[in-house]
Amino acid sequence: MKFVFSFILLLHTLIHLMGFAKAFQLVEINQLSQSISKPMGILWLITALMFICSAALFLTKQELWFIVAFIAILNSQALIILLWKDAKFGTIINIIVLLVSISAFGNFRFNKMVQKESAQILQNIQVENTPVISENDILHLPEIIQKWIKNSGVIGKEKVISLRLEQIGQMRTKTDSKWMPFTAIQHFNVVNPSFVWTTKVDAMPVLKMVGRDKMYNGEGEMLIKLASLIPVVNEGKNKKINQGVMIRFLAEICWFPSAALNDYMTWETIDATSAKVTLTADGQKVSGVFSFSDKGDLVSFEAKRYYGSETNSKLEKWHIEVVSFKTYNGIKIPNKSNVIWKLEEGDFKWLDLEIVDLEYNVVF
Image 1 (cartoon, rainbow, N blue to C red):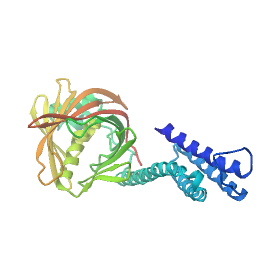
Image 2: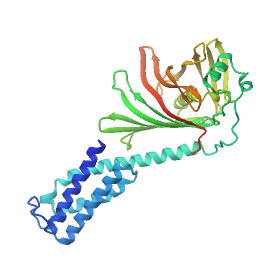
Image 3: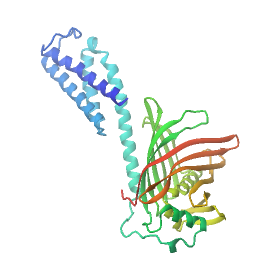
Image 4: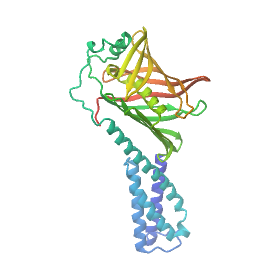
């Protein structure tokens, strides 16, 4: 669709160049029966240049390209009105360009919001003189958790205090709905449990959704916008969402296992291959169970999580299955996993997730 829209911009450029050529009698243009003065011809040329400039900025992914496009559309529509008889169909192209430009503006505002929130959760992060983890540091943990940390390659590495990761995958909202591809970026503060996760979802062939989940100071927020403009979900200050984002943080320490050492984590042995963990943050507590192989490879995580944020939403089993592993910065983590709701009517697998990039101890 990127190249289709670029073609539309270039086509509109050529149409405006026709107005310039007509005014200066450079070529015979029968499609334009009305006369165009030379000063007006200059305006047609300027508008054409603005459209070609916006196309170039769009193709090179300059985030403010829509500003040039907005000005070009205003100029273009004024010229079309003056030559309505011959140029009225150019209004259709202007409407298309306007809608895409408005969506780009919404995306720009959304990205700025996410950047601000990510900077907020990482504002006090200090990555200098980060302590290195030794075997003595993990002796108080259940045996299977010690085995997991050793097997992951954490011993001898710096303790993780922040990270940034990139994800790809597919998701769906109902058991009978289609899978939607997505990409995502997530920032974590591991010292004070918090994260900002932002995603772009291919909801339809020509329409994307953007979303943001956030955990900060023990509170969760969820925002989903269609075409970066129309709020579909915008919820926060909700105990069920707060519980959900805390469960999510708990599950996602599998990507930074040294978080198991932090004071806000409490561990209890269940058996030789599983342990219960409780996260305490801002006076709230959530718990879940990590299960492992005999070697200490993570197999799954499961917890009770609210299935929705409505008043009648109930706690259901939220289950993560590990599919494969990959090593980043010397630490082996689950890079592919499936997320499943274990509902009374049957399993609902709603998310396939893959980590494609990860960086530890980042500052914003």
